[in-house]
Image (cartoon, rainbow, N blue to C red):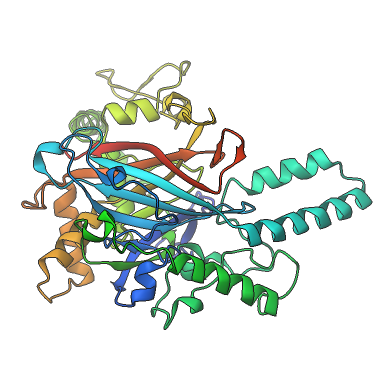
Length: 447
């Protein structure tokens, strides 16, 4: 939580106030992937490259643009299994770089791949059986236990009490590590693999982790259309926690300053309000938030709130105004009116279409950020020169302002991905061994 505001302000008040950690995880580039085993491993998240598929039977047409019908490049792949789910899970997002397809639905597509992990499912069932016995001994009903598990399953990155703090979760969340592992067997296991209550270093856990990685690595793209798909150079995608600086306190003007200002105060208030009408405050907020960590390519917050890019039709859809709010407040003699906090827009996902397979609501999962375009462009150019943090920050600011030309046609501001809340993978006859579901993509276009 942000520290409470004090009535008194001084220059020394900000000293000792630490940054505030949010619930958002940021995906950042972490070097070129050169290991063949990592390229084939679906547990290794990436920017660009070819997809490491959980099933070799996935149709190549899944990556085709719905407008020009051409195969698209993979933008990101994220290893993101739900907690307490027996399914291995990866999220794939493709984007079309054709200028003619920009601004059109279907030029960015997102899919989630699911595969039933029998060994992990067995361990989860054992865990649930032990929990039932423990809770029943304490008098907790089975229905209460199921509700608790359902709440935990909403966030695949929810941490157990004996897990390391979130700030060091880059390898445990998206499966990527820095430096890259020497072999696929060294990739960290899924969070929660110690469901038997044993130490993570036990022989059974090691065997389970090894069998999982071997199974993933055995799914190759050889002798399939995927092997010849267009692609950007592959890079590791690591995660860091988002930290925001504490809010700045504004020093109130002294009484004598107000006396000297006189009637100019009313004129200043009117001018400030008029200027606000000419600026996109949503874009300014987006720019300010992103500038704290300019390298971010992905923002991940399953079940959270997306960061809107601009005050456009998509923003109005996702953040509708409250139906009832207090009257406007007069701030000057000219009766300029501003809306109070009660009338601010609030995120509401009820307008989103439900999952077409199970009817469950869709929830926000992640969004792609403008710097991803810069990263892909930089690697595709292969100039051998890497940007400094300051150069990258300037490029992000230019991209946000629409001042960057020749970005291979991609000109979106941010891409929002909404996934099935239940992460469904059921078909006629019960549980499917493999699942391949297209999810909802909404785009703030940089127009």
